[in-house]
Image (cartoon, rainbow, N blue to C red; front, side, top):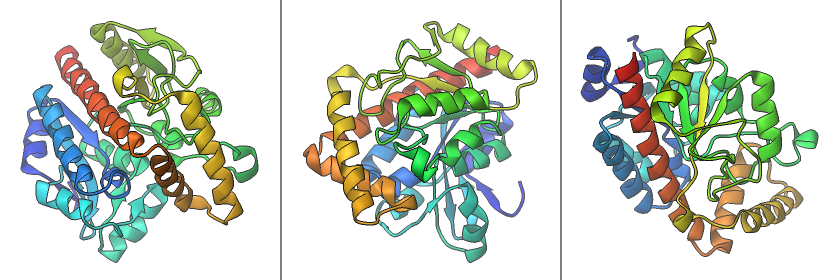
Length: 304
């Protein structure tokens, strides 16, 4: 790799041996759960992926270099340093040039994963089209990055502060396949269903992996979205969450919150309003999507 990338020995060996690898982002470690739950959850995600037969590869920018396969020490640094900035696609160059740290969002993590040859990525919830996007034009860079990299993204739908119907419409426009793995509905992060249907459902892992392979084999160069919901026992009612999100968003807009500050503002307020239930749901969905991603990564290697 070039001078801007640093691979852990574990990830480098796995890629050289063509063993399954699952890429991860790091912005959630900094701006998601609070310490020490953020660190414990990140380490448990790694254990979950390894238990599934794959190698975890958390991405981040550390001292001005992209790291793929962050060490426990690096993850702990991010978990205990709340001012590490989120890095999206547009922020990569300035962050590298500045020589500092950056927690990769989905869009930035996909770029790192693609550069080193990782074809499976796990995340709890993707970015998407925000409520009120017809006024704000607030659409996540994640959606565009899905069109640029041959990576299967395993998620529990879009984050709960996003409009699921518009997100699905935009994904259709971009030509990104969305398949529910053993689920009919597009999940809603903390909730089992967003009320919007997945375009397709596949229950068999081999069939799912073949769908991913064939999407790429015929010349499609973009990603493939696999959705799998949170466990029902850990889920929150979608109506309750969406009502809270709309209420908090209106509060945020009234006080001038906008841009990158909107998402952490809403998530923190929703967490407080649910008395921490969203934190437990967040941990649950992070672990479940990581487990499914490991299954997909292993099966992809077996079928390739």
